[in-house]
Length: 474
Image (cartoon, rainbow, N blue to C red; front, side, top):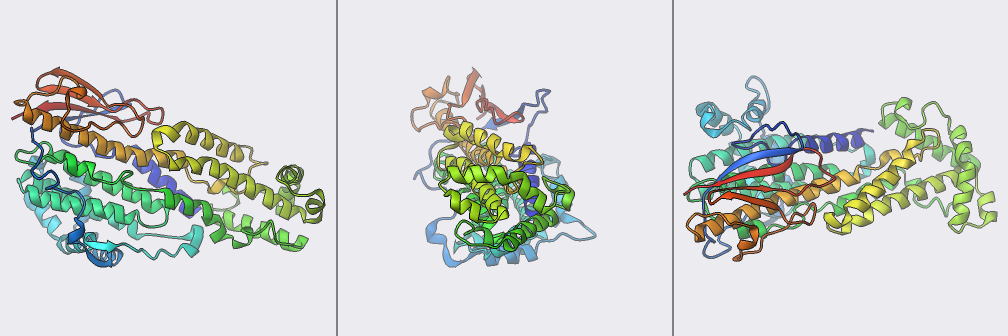
């Protein structure tokens, strides 16, 4: 179906590309399980006052208003046409070192985003962000503006890089604030797709913090990073919407247990569901049960449905009285919701605690779909919850690694440019653990000026686990 396909494509895009991009000094190791980046750090002490810098706009700078209106205006002003194909060029420049960029051409391209940037700034200072998403559209909901928001984010990221390279630190931090707020605002939408785009934009913006750590005279951002929300993007509400969206698309299913249907009415509900799902998934061949008529599907599941309902407290008299199609729908709906809840409930816990349970819940959901003839009709609508949880935690891990780098910069500033022998040697501020595994980051010092910081291995991550090679310079 259209919406589920977009979710899967967005998840695949996030999983295929590192959250912080390749960055300056990135290597291409033969070992595809890791992604090595080289950071040349500048020591920086704790700022005075400690919260002198923020990575989200200050509350006192905000004004009453709906940010969504300004983001829509920014999107309307986003250049993306012939003959320049500005956005394509900006994507090509993402991983080019600033010193190698065609600066006049870059400046000309970014100048076309000036009005767009102005509305992003106005949006970031609003107290609220209400997208008014027409959730009543259900699985047919389309949000073409999201791709435009990502183009805007690529341009903003490039602008931040240029500000950092030019030594305009305060301006770079201000743009970084706006970009991170934009990511969180987009994730205020009710759908999982909006959450995932918010994750992607927030991750892209954090490249700026990585660049600042390597820039002379840049402030230490340890406390600014620490003050960011955790999780940075909270997906709980959107996942709840994904669970309940079934009843938006098919309201007749919500109270099916209490409704008294005739056999014809129950058959109509099955036919409506199967026809709509076939249409959204690209035709009958896209369904779990191609070529099976509704009556055949009911007969395949009726014996299982009666046994299931009896175990759930339905009286034998009630089971025999209801149409076979209604019994099968109730059975498959309740089985699907129970399986979904066995995954969904773990999102209330930190990822490193919930990961094995999410993985097992995902396997159980997969079993509902595996047998094509006896598949649960609702299982095709389940999003990849296990992967979504990892992407949320991976963004938080990125922030935690940046916090660790800033703690190292703080230590180096207090110890004549020397790197700590171990992370335990850092005592002025707490060094965070990895939100993905719950373990400490792996740190190995080669000498007083060189070290290696890496995320612990996780079963959820088979490719591009971040490894940062750190060099401290004066």
